Amino acid sequence: MNHQLTFTAADRDLWEQYDQLAARAYGHPVSDITHLRGHADLQVALRGGRVVAGGLGLLVDQHFGGAPVPSACLGDGCVAPEERGDHVATDMATERLRPLIDRGAVISTIVTSSTGYARRLGWEAPVDVLAWAVATDDLKKSFTGEDFEVEHGLTDEAEVLQRQLARQWNGPVHRPAWWTRWKQDKSNLTAYRFARPGLPTDGLLTLTTKRHERHGMSLVVHDFWAASQPTAAAMLAFLGRHSTRARTINFRRGALPPYPTLLHALRHHRTTAESWHPWMVRILDAPEAIRLRGWPADLTTTVHVEIENATGEDWNRWLLHIKNGSAELAPTSVPGQVTLSRRQLAVWYAGGYRTATSARMAGVQATSEQALTSLIRSTTDREPWLPDHF
Image (tube, rainbow, N blue to C red; front, side):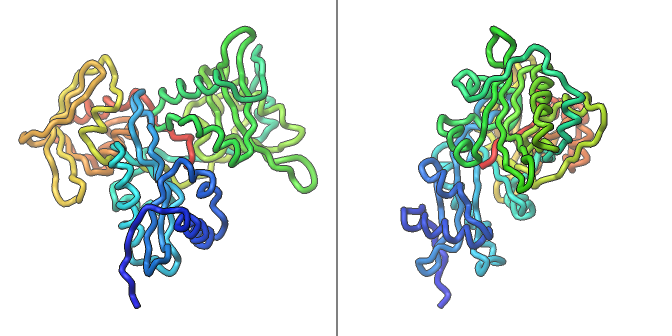
């Protein structure tokens, strides 16, 4: 009998069923389903009373333009192997977003290897995501710690520094109070703080290690937060000190910020960069997302835009006005100077188009080169970077 598919928020029993389904679908247990039970929303799909799909959702703020924007971060979603091919994931995504939208989410972020399905639903990747590996000896020979002191352990001051630095990028999560403990418990992280003598903490590094069977260890960096170039150099020098135990320093995907400290100082360019599936953004409520985002205080611009609607079947005309660090997106009847699909809107919002040229090569249409340039410049004061995993 082909039972109808139904959707519901998971109770204790359904949560356990989903935990078992995820282990079967992924081929291994998914620890976050246990670790995030007290913080995440879990929506599941049922057929004949049996859980056949589901996924976690976190309502957290993400920094864009220096301001926190309520985001529906979706993770650990899956569909039972026997249910795949019937677009269950599409319906499941809608149901996973619904309660988070009701609680105020105006954007959504997802990390998935199934980028095609995410794109069909309006998510898009604003930037490539890379994992880096560099020989420990190369770090040792290329960087010095100057007069920085290194202390073991996490402090409130270090967490405040992380939150301050997160605002300098488009994408980092404004980590709730429980976030750090969750990450530490999940990955067995060790934290180190960096500061000059007598001065406040200026850098934060977290890493995990795994002993090799015969000798030494593997070392993976999870957090790399530096307030200045000398601090970043000192942190890289500290990693170089592990040369007697670890041959290679691995930066987990997205962990290394997109600044040139590493590549511009290495004596030998022997790094390895591995591409991973990217984080992807979707705009759920364009007027609210734009109102809540931060904007350059010295920028004043007005652009008529046409934006693909939520169903992808029509285009709406809007007037975007930015002034004094604020912005408004208001309906209008005037034809747009720039036309954006839902996915292009998401990339622009995250600062993913660094120039008008990159926007045009992504398919953004414009009747005015000046309008396109003004629009792109409005979000390029901060680069896209999401080091957080969920």
